[in-house]
Length: 364
Picture 1: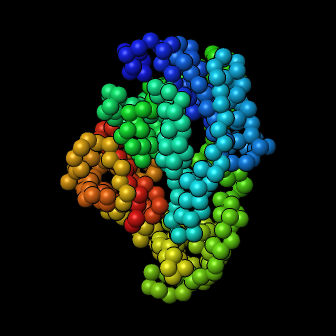
Picture 2: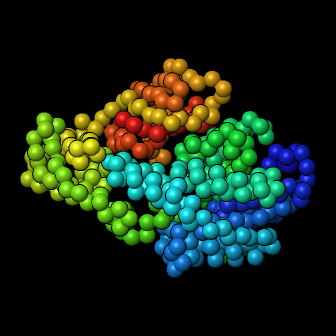
Picture 3: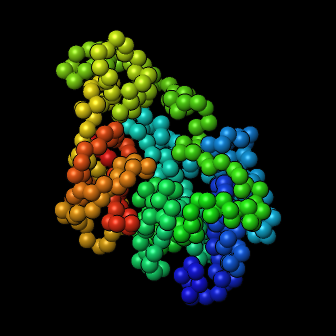
């Protein structure tokens, strides 16, 4: 068996590598090439910002040129696929709609769920590739037909949270060559490989929003989100007006536009139907029961009833213990401790030790 789990020589194993133009995916591609695999790099053109050089970006302008250069200097084939329409439909529209609905989106998960592990994965299969590799920091274990997903060695860079929506058949096909490395080691490998991107900054969460504010981006695509509405307190007293619910997220304190208050108030509820926002004290934010829907389960054939495990609702949060209860495509997670800033549109992702069991989209 070679390092990717195939019973054949590396030179006979074709691997498509998703190359964003950053250091991680570049190292993943060159690493596999140096190990002897038949590598094809593919960069997806996701949005039409040909002159973008913002450090937040990926898959645009200079990023495509960087990926091409890495492939050329390391003697493997590189292709650019124009996925702008797919990205707009699968990621950007969802991003805008979520804010318009009073939710907080997770565009990185949607990108993995649609263009990367659906469209690009199918493209790799059409090309006869044995696997699709990415630069994600996560670990895949198991056989060709029953893989499991685990946290990366470098917990500070672990990206398993953003991969919770990966289907089992997709996980069987995908490989994560960087999972057993620390980020510092990847930077050193980039220098050892003499990659032009060795010092390139990491892309940020919302790579396609290159302006200072996501609010401007949302308003430009959907001006109707600027509809004024009422701001209430928890007793339904009117505190003022807002300029559109897309300008607010659960847990927000600054920029609300209400002054002269005796105590700090936070956004604790956004009601799309009433076009209203409710403010309350920080105590009102705290919850320990999370409801979710559209579950993707990677923990075996049986959905759990009252399973002791851990979960988290933000990628940067440490997963915390609690009880998971799933009924078909919806469920609840009851944390042992209270959390704040829980927002519909975000994800609740479940773990058992370092294994990702699955996740769902938070509804309340």
